Each structure stands twice: as structure tokens, then as C-alpha cells.
Image (cartoon, rainbow, N blue to C red):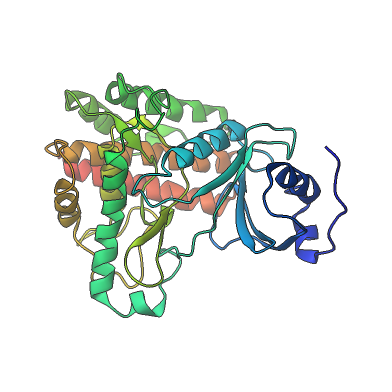
Length: 356
């Protein structure tokens, strides 16, 4: 692939260490994606471990997503899966970034990547625009819109959408505790980590989950990390503009997404267990109202919602503890590790409250 003449944009120059803009431009040429130089490159606000780049070519805007330069896991496979699910959602009512084109090969940018349409929306956990900040009624509808997003995702026929092999539904619930217990044990490789003994309730919660597991479920698509920080809201009202960060998406039990909301939702007597709260909070629905909203849009059995919420606490807490373990070994910022460890402890305290 021949490289085009480099552009002279200082913004693009700043990105060349992360994205080879010349090779990207040549690849876009091969796909017929507009013409001319790549302009106005910028990184969108909001933290993400993956690399995001918004830029313009001709009259069209693009958002590029690729793995970090040194991913902990197979970043290219994650990009391939994300692109596949976004493509499958194209004709559904699930709010999502529209896929433009994907490059599953690694020889263009050193990793698989894809281009999607930029989303005109905002992250509520970063800050609310005046319309939403000034009206509790709008914030109430924002909470319901959050639930509507996963209700729509749970209604997608993943088989008809071409995603029958996207995950292993058989034994999904049975595998959860053992899979995440193994993940927690793997952190022992990090020197300096004190171990799971610091997490009150780790064994009690795991045992309770195994003892109270629902007997059956209806498989479907799950987002896998669904909370207020992973959606963008529209500026003109309370509806979702898009659900983002699809890297944990799989086929499983969609009720786990609802449980994830409950695990991270601020309660009347306790704050949010993770950094997913919004200021001001007044107006957002209570947790039980979110469950009622979901119930009106599904035929799934919600009688075990406490179990799904406890599983979400267990899984998310163990995921967050990984950063704490890496920080103990000097492989992550100590302040970040300490903050996430505190969130892990809060998640398990919430789970213990629910099962006591």
C-alpha cells in the first residue's frame, strides 16, 4: 500500500505516534471513504483505555477506534467483536454508534480498528448541560432511558442478527462464579498485592451466588459493562444518543445488564458504588422504579433480580481489583488502584447487605 503525501496539520502530527495517519488515509482511499486530506483530528473528551480519534475528511466526520499500543488482552480481537456487534445492530432500535467500515487485519495500523459515525451526545457522569442540570423531571426520564437501552438490546434476536456464535450461552450462569474467582486468583502474579483476604465477603458472596442461581434463562445479547458512564445522552432531551464501549459484549443473560445498573446505582442511604453518579442527582428514579420500567418491556422472569445485582457486584468488584493489584506491583497509578479498591469494597458491602 503506497503512502500518500503527509498532511501538514499539527493536530494530525500529534497523533502519528498512536495512529499512522498516512496509512489510514490510504486505507480509506481503498474503501472509497471520501477523498482528500484528514483534517481537524482531536481526541474526544472522556477517559477510555482504547484509542479514539475524531477527524474530518471532505464533508464527513469519522470516529476511529483501535486498541491501545500495549493492550493487556487481545485488543485486535476486541475491535473485531465490537465492529461485528455494531454492524449487527444496524437495523435495530438499540441506540449505538453506526459502523462505517472495519479493518480486521493488523497490517494497516498495527492492530484491527474500525470507523464509526461520531455521536452528538454527552456523558452525564462528566457533567450535565443546562437543560438537564436545571430540570429534575428530565433527569428522571434519563434514568428510564438508560433502562430502555438495555431493554431494546435484550429484545434483539441475536441468532437472526447473525450472532449465534458470538458467545456460549449454554452454562453461562453456572460459569460465572468460577470464572471470576479464577480471575481474582490470577492477580497473585502481582508482587505486593495483599490478596483477596482484604475483600470482606468475597467467599460468602460467591457461595451465595452458587446456592441461589436461577435454574434457567433466555439467552440474548448483553453489553457487559452497562452503567451511566457508558452511555451518551442527547442534548435536546433525556433520550439516549448511543450506548458506547461494547468491548465486553457477548451472548448471555441480558438480565445481568439490569443487575449491573442496580449494582452501581446510588441508593437512598448509600452513594454510588463506582464513579457513575451524576450531579445533581435529584430526580433520577429509585432502583425499584428502574426494575419496573424494564419489566414493562420484557417477558423475562425478574423474580431473581437480587441475584443478578449481587453477581454484578461480584464481577465488577473483581474486575476493579485487578487495577489495585497491578498498582501494588507498580504497573498502575497507586491513587487509581486505591480508588478502585475502595469501590470494590463498596460493591461487596452492597452485595452483603442484599444477601443478609
